Length: 112
Image 1: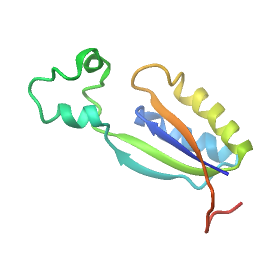
Image 2: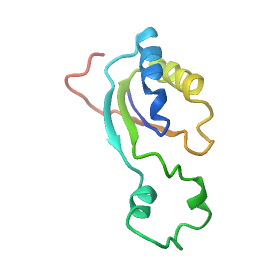
Image 3: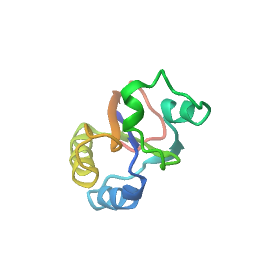
Image 4: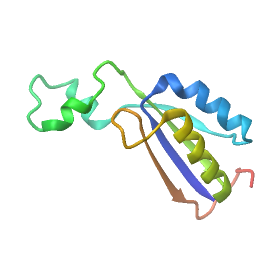
């Protein structure tokens, strides 16, 4: 099993993404509100010399992101990644999201 973590910057796509997951039998996500470090720092500083060119890639109107945590089988991870790409688009583009997985060494209370 793996822990799939998706930081979704396009929060308007959350419902569509969750429906697509359910349609493919992928359930059990935990979703929390989150804010990135640069976005948080930017709200407290008038002058941002440390940000450089990254400052221009920030969606200044977005208040927060949604972070999804999902414990998935290897096969579900592949399907989830496909769904995320279909709904959200290319994650290498600015202001889309960040996706990574981590191995789950042990677990309790997770349906396998």
